[in-house]
Length: 357
Image 1: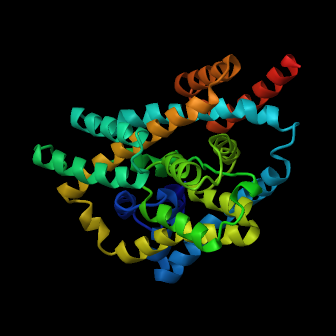
Image 2: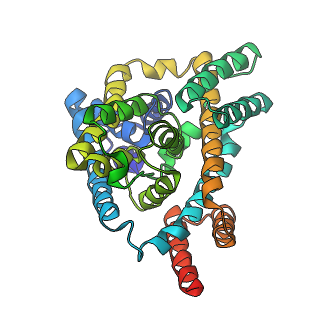
Image 3: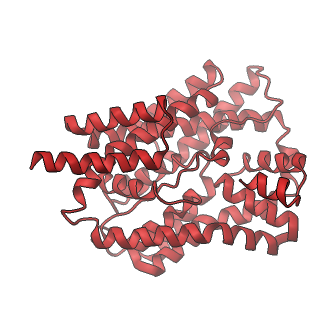
C-alpha cells in the first residue's frame, strides 16, 4: 500500500530508492511498516516529516487498540463473553502456527540456520531469556555462517522483511486490572522501551517477549489472559507495537497507555533518525546479511517456543483441539485471513458452550 501511494501515485520517491529504504528497515529493530512511513517522512521533510509521518501512522491503531482495551477491562470477564474467548484461544494458536510455517519456508535457508533455530528454541524452553536468545542467536549464528563461507553478499529477506509486506498482524496483550496493581509508570515504561529497542522480526515474535516478561518474570498476567488479549488484537489494524497501548491501559488507565505507547515506539523514531543517512550502505555488508539471516531464524525459534508454551495451557480438551486443527488447516491450505479465523473460533466457542449447556 505504501509503495503504491508514495511511488506510483504521488511519485514522492523513486522505485529504486524505495527498495533501498525497505532494505534499511531490515537492519534495525522495530515494526517495518511503521519505520517505512518514518523513512518516507524523513525523505520528504527531514526530522519534522519523520515525526508527522510516524505519529500519523501510529495514532489510528493506538485509538482503536485503546477502545478494545476499555471493552476488555469492562466486559472481558463476563460469562456472556467467556464462551467466545474460549473458542478464540485455540484459533489464535492456529494463526500463529500458520504464520510459523509460512515464514519458516523463507527464513530457514540451510542446515546451519536450522541448527541455530533449534538451539535457540530449546534454550528458550529451558529458561533462557528471549532478548538474550535473540541477540546471541543472531550474533553467533552470523559468525558461524560467515566463517563457513556462505555467500551473504545479498541482504537477507526473511522473517524480518515479510512483516512489511502485510504479515504484521497486530497482537495485543491484556489482563485484569487487579493482577497488576502497584505497577509504576516508570517500570511499565522501561519494560516497553526495552522491547521497542530490541524487537526484530514478525509481529508474532512480540508474543514471546510478552509471555517471557509479563507472564513469567513479572506475573502481571496469566498465559490465559495473554491469549485473550492476542485474540482481541487480531481485530486491530495498524502497527503491532500498539499492543503497548492495550497493556498500559489495563494496568494503569490512560496514563499507562500513554507511557507504554511512547516507550515502545520511541526507539523506532530514534533509529530511523540516526541511521537513515548510512544504513543503505550497511545493508550491502556480508557480515550484516549473515547476522540478519541468523536473526530471522532466531525470531522464528522464539515463535515456536512460545507457541508450545501457550499450547500447553490452551489445548486441554477435545473442542479446543478441534478448533485449533480446523483453524490450522484453514490457515495453511486455504490461506484464510487471521481475522476470519479468530471470528470463526469465537462462533465455534459460543456454539460449543450452548451445546454443552
